[in-house]
Image 1: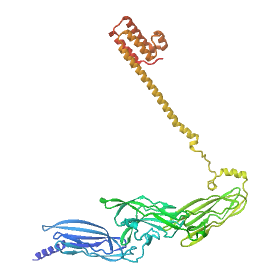
Image 2: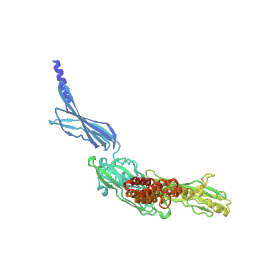
Image 3: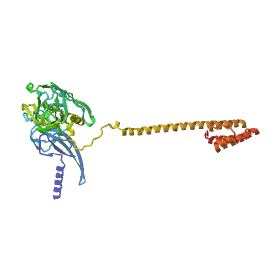
Image 4: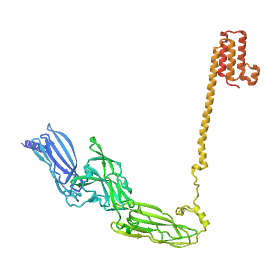
Length: 580
């Protein structure tokens, strides 16, 4: 009896374990606005009753970024009975849209026989503030995007879509300009280009054409290698946005307007199997500039919050030191590009045009940096002089107009060199401000161009000589080869003629002509002894054969008798060389 009860209990327990169930859990219970959380719904499907439908859980306060599924199955045998178990996992990647405490779920499973199975619920707490413009949090404070300018946050960057942007409303390029209007002539401007896209629409992008600026000096100051996206809500639509490029531009003096051409991108949209290339462009900029307030009362004034310093307030010049320098350093934020310093002229001194250096940087909202002016001062006569202070009229949006000034410089000039010595010294010195910094005893180098020096001409002559020698060698070898070919042709021609001789007389005459053509020796004109005395033993085989041929002629030999003589004559010609 007890055994039967135990078996029934185990069977009921197994049945309850193998029934269809649903369980939901999150990987975190607290997160800030904009972060993501993974929610996993695990469904255990019993073989007795299949799941025919799943009612997705309600997810208030969250947006689904991604959704994925996976399945697994197992088979077990208990007391000879085979049973199977299927497990299905649905993973939701959620992004928090607003702060608060939210209850996620439940998910509802509809079984084959109409029965419903509910999962458990998950509570998640979201901290922080909602994105600007979110309809669920009216009046919420705006959140400044990291790296954006003051006018970007809650201003132009998150403004409603323009007519141009609505043409490609799912993604677009937005341009912002800081500071906001009114913008003044000569005022540095920060121009930023942002990409806005709804989630997972753009897989890749490239720059087809970057903007060019008109009536302004420009420099690229920010170009992220990897786009860093933030998230915002514009008109009820959630967009991811990232900075593409940022430029600083300084309008030309008195320019009433500056402009920029379009930035054009090529973007890839769609999935891997359905990717398409599209062209995306920004608007073309046209910005009106207004004159600085009260500009007529501040001639030469520029935009900036600057200070001026100098490296000295006095100097002494004389015969031993007729030249010296003074350096002014301007530091701050503003139009350093157009900044110019011009101390007033001083009778008795000559101030040369300055050497200038500029080091600028973007501090997040403004163009700042350092600009130095190095003047060379030359004494023209003896006496005491004063270089007046240099003044700058500056306009700042917050501080208005103000004037900054350097300090005056006292110059004492002692005895100067005579005119002849001064002229001689002037020939040796080109720029004193460079020479005064060089070490004593510096070596003097010849500045003659290397191409005008004898060593260059010598080096140039070497390859030319080698080339000329190679050409001469080639010509000599060509002439020698041609001569050998002509001699060989003549020798073979005479061999053919000797082989064609049919009687001793013809053979003898042909032999005489062949020897004369090949060796240059005329056996007919001289006696054999005289020829041998002149050419030594080189000609003896030829004279001996000539004597035998003469004997054959006198004996009246037949054609068959002269065959050996023909062969000997041909053999001698093959080894013969010119002797005269």
